[in-house]
Amino acid sequence: MSRTRTETMRRRRASSRRRKLAALNAALLIAVGVVVAWNVWASNSGGETADERPMQENPAGPTLGETEAPGDDAAAPSEPAGETGNDGEAPAEEPSADGEAAEPESGTETPETETPGAGGDGGRVKLAFVGDVLLGEYVGTLLERNGFDYPYPHVKGQLQGADLAIANLETSVTSFGGEKPGKKQYEFRSDPDALPAFKEAGFDLVNLANNHTLDFGPDALRDTMKHLEESDLLHVGAGETIEEAYAPVYVEKDGLRIAVFGFTRVVPDVSWKVDKNNFGLAHTYDYTEPVKAIKKAAGEADLVVVMAHWGEERAQEPHPEKQVDLGRRFIDAGADLVVGSHPHVLQGFERYGGGWIAYSLGNFIFTKSKDPLTYEAAILEAECGGGGDCSLKLTPYFADTPQPQPMPPERTKELLARLDKLSVGASVDAEGNIESTDE
Image (cartoon, rainbow, N blue to C red):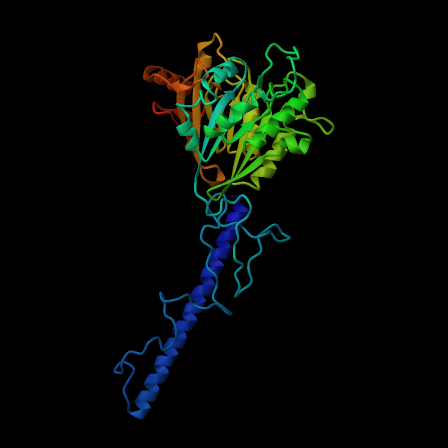
């Protein structure tokens, strides 16, 4: 909150208190006058004095502690409960011509109302995030063999317990495209029949801004979006226009409005980037558009989340420019949580500028590689209130097959200790709790 806004609010509250005290003093003076007049009358008439007569009920109107004393014209309205700004204080009035907030005129007090994104009287929400998800290739073969719900028995309870569960969907989900185009070493496509079980496991929203959703071309991605919508799954990060691709999805949960974005800094070809004449993905090679979109959403939502596809594969530390610089820019623009994918391994966390950056959540459901670090999966839970007040907890899983399972205790201990060392401005304890070290 700015110093000007804070001082303005103090003046408003002081002015309100002064009016109420003046009203109380006036009421007390009236009461004293009535008592004096009664005593004079009683003395002159030979009757009982005020002290000798039975107590009358409020002969001079309300006394302190009974009701609000009236102001100059009418009772001043109290502050509406819960209608506060991001930092818990009521929003300031519009500034006057000299830049200061206008002081209400004597006898009236403007009721303060909730502004978009101010937090209101909402509670807290629980978000769950996972890394890269692929439902095709060898994973698809196992799904056909074991059923589409095969990946989820050990994790669906945790995912279903979240108000909003989000994944990076590292594949098109379509029957379009025919044979593989052969333009890349890895080209991913998944069966649309896998989506109902994915939804039933607890997932609500996916990021499409990555380096595989356009493997089979624009029509296959359009078909992916259609299948997601038919399965009641939200999606971000792709669109027919710049405005559509960079737009967040807004979700209302427990009185809070959450904005979720999807961006990528990894595309195999410039044709994958959305522009005014090209269907494509929201990218961050130029951060101007995403920063502008985040700033706008920060004024309209209580919580802003960015899903970022970035970095270098199998690197345990985030890239200084491709991840660290971008993540901090997103927080500076108004994001509360930035959650990364693409490296296929878990990376550390950063507490920065009042926000949180999870640089990479690694794989979650994916084909097996030769690098054992890619078998380390996790669910990141964030319990958040309005204004980005979030507490984080990481639950590790072991996923050398596409079925994440509880990680053995000793390996869990080693993983969390490693992530603690990789984190900046944050610590990761033995229970997976992630806390700021700067507060």
